[in-house]
Image: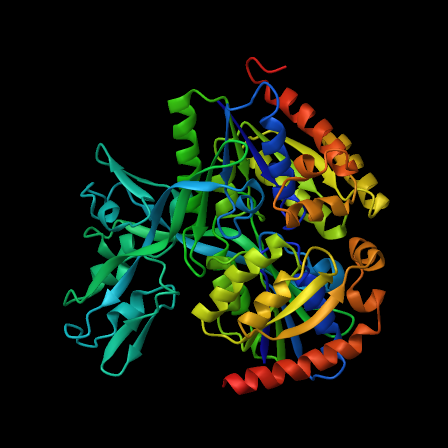
Length: 301
Length: 287
């Protein structure tokens, strides 16, 4: 079983549009019904919007725990506020209260309270789903806004996808990654055999592509780069190409700016399925072929 | 007045709006700070081009176990909620990448065998822009998972947060780094694009603003692409639409080159002044 993760550093470069096109293309060739999809952007889970999934399983996600002070037991000594490094405990009249949003769940206050007035409570931080999508099984999730542990939820979604590949003897997990380089990205990247970086030829896109490539290198995951909206600013495209050449990073293609991508999104479909002849679709087919070759999957030409 | 710029979806134009607003207000307000809280992928410096003169490391305290004093009792491992410290065969091991720096293990150790040593997670950089904006951003080190401590330190760096106007450029999403960025703001501008992805993620971000109880309004960027559902959503939920910026190739190309919206289209200055007036009203009403 092999795992491909789609990353970008900067948000909005087209990760989900590329992933959904790959999901569609994977359902056509040798890989058909051997692929599982995982949406690892649990803050902004958009893959479901273009794969028309039907939920077959839905479960609560218990995130971290948070502290709760029992006002009847609290003597108002203030030790909890002193030991809290997350500025989450404050005096409220004669007792102390925990701010559930600021609480990190470390429980330091629980162990320091001299009268055992503080206990930890599990937080329902969202849901995760298994769905039948148009192109295969999709694992996805919805983190409740303002909740912690998106990295933990990403790990859970990926674990479920991996378990299915073991049960069903599938070959391939396709992971739609989150933006950034921090905890959810690290969770999304962990265990990946290959990363595809979707860059865009803008000053910000190039800056963040560097950061995400450093991250994949840090975790020893080989990376390929493609350029989305490559014709918007040719100088930026040339810069990305030169950088990749200098760093010996394989460039697998350019996707031109194409309103068909948005039109397809509005129709709830990947562009390759909605308009196979669109310039972006043709570019995506070529990129997919190169990525699959790089993955070196058994029995796939 | 602290104005935060957020979005559920990435790449909708947060930094475009934040930098244009900061440039507009730099001409009329006495003191203005800009805090780029997207410490994983900070971009505002590319546009505002500050002259960085200050740098400060962001550290977290990580436990260090003195093997001579440790008797392997395992109390530290018991209290650690993050499995960052474990006792194996009488040996106490620390996993710094799991540690949240809460200090609980140090407090409970009966042998006082644990001391805390600072570990660098990232850095803060600050300096003035040519317009006199007091600019600062955070940079999470590559491979470090925890963005929140860097954001917390950035927001507390010297007196930047007490400027007359503070512009906070938030990371995308709707989880902990965003909450930390938005915490304490007087008003939140949610930037979105009129597409199904933009709408879905705007919903997440708007729920977050309600959860933390801060008034918010929406700017629709790249207006004209996609569909009309974002406008309908705002109307149905009674969310003020503060501005619409049409999709124009020239704006996209200018931003690609690192130009701000005001440099590409100076006429927007007037709109941003109006925006500020509107925000003052809306934030005032909420108080």
